[in-house]
Amino acid sequence: MNRAFLVGNLTRDPELRKTQNDVSVCTFTIACNRRFTNANGQREADFLNIVVWRGQADNCYRYLKKGRRVAVSGSIQTRSYEGQDGNRRYVTEIVADEVEFLSTANSGNRDNNDDFDSFGPRNDTVNGDMQSVDDDDLPF
Image (cartoon, rainbow, N blue to C red; front, side, top):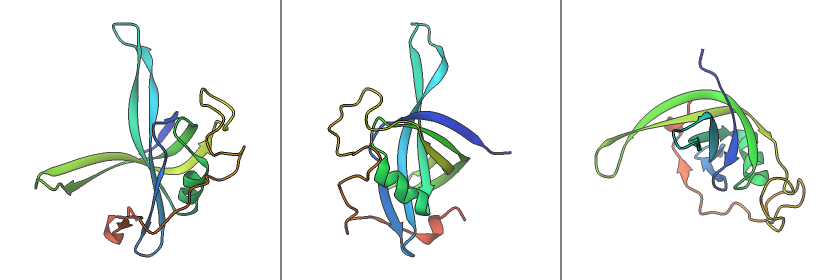
């Protein structure tokens, strides 16, 4: 069984791309605190890459911003690619089946003037500068 359940905060704003067949894919990273503290008494965090597809990708892009708290349920996947230097690179990421928004614009330690009106969409729009994703990279 390959199943991951995570709760964490976004470390940056989500990024949205479209495949050649116009399928939305959204990526973001969340920081998840570890259960125990280190030798210095500090709680460390893991930074996990999340990939969301289709309509849920559009919603994540519209409604999430850096610092927002989310719960993610999905599967862990590893892929590889050849870097510009010719070396093989490996990436481990969570392909989300479900993303639940746990915080609103007015909660947490973010300031309230961040272009987010309660549960309204982000003010920036997706433009023509999106990177295309090759259909061969899709996990299905």
